Length: 485
Ligand code: ARG
Image (tube, rainbow, N blue to C red; front, side):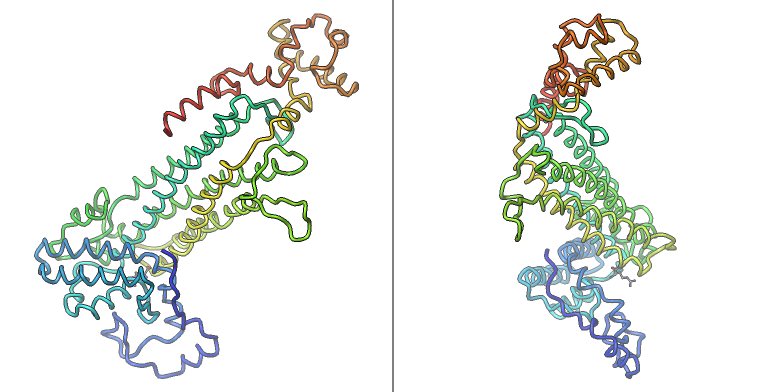
């Protein structure tokens, strides 16, 4: 749900705020103000308020309240009539939020108090019974867990879409030859399909990290109350079940104060964003005029306002950059949580914004990357030309010397180096060098060597499991096709 327009009176200028500090505050209007004679200062309210961002939890807050009130009624803690009134009121509130007409208020601090106050306005006393046997501490922990869990499900689905896009490119290019790099220097020829599958494997691990995280976090804090549990005969299994949790959390102190589920989700998001940034970087390099390895369509490029010839890979650059704010969010929440004593502390209100921001960024990045991967068109000629350049089959020559002449690899490496130097001097690729010239360096070389000196032969020879040979890539493509469907 997009953040709604919330008036943030608290953001008035400083002079205004300090004026208010001296003012005699009015009698407390807050939900918790029973023992307070006066309302909070403007500054107190400014630092305390979270409704501008935690309204994103509204849907989950309502789901939690429905589950809680159902349970209270079944357990005989509230009447069925009150439960029905609560449900009807919450349904109206959900509609108001959906329609953008809900009167969000800074004075009511956060989403929990905003919804509860609105419910009381609508249904009176029954609304005031909803908060029996629970606290905002277990409430916010539950809402936030549900929000994070929902996003993990989105990422898992998005990663499958991205994997399918990569698989589509891999299947179409099992034997498209390109240079493989180490140190970003041409190393050995590989297949474009193999390169795509490398990312598919990374994203498969990212997906399994999100799945692991989801399984571990899927326990319900609801019913832990403020920190110690509650004397009411609540049924925590019932509420856990209603909210799709596997079980209730086993320790009430832990339930209200654990945020490692969010940290773990951010850690998994950070790793995933790192992988996205690596693929983005390759796309930026590959689309450059100097490389020309792939072309992106108008859909995923932008023009320059001054240089008419330009086609910039902005989407790739922005995805490459998103990792900054995502890792920043992980760092931010790590530091918020560091050193916090049990159980709940208000510090934890600072858990949401970094997660919201990071997850928005990742969601957009994953979607844009899937679109870009499906969009990119490899330029086979440029890839093949680059694959043959820079003596990329030198290792194949050395391997031939080892396999055919029984030469120790170190000696073969040395001989190959001399042949490369000769080719370089003549301005030729290795497969264009004459046999006579090669024999001046190693007389036992025969013309069988040419079999291994083309980039395609080089790649095709690498048939070890997980290797780049088209035959191996085809096997991996088939495997992934049966997994991804
Ligand atoms: N807005 C609060 C948060 O996000 C809700 C919990 C407040 N609990 C309390 N004891 N004041 O953490």
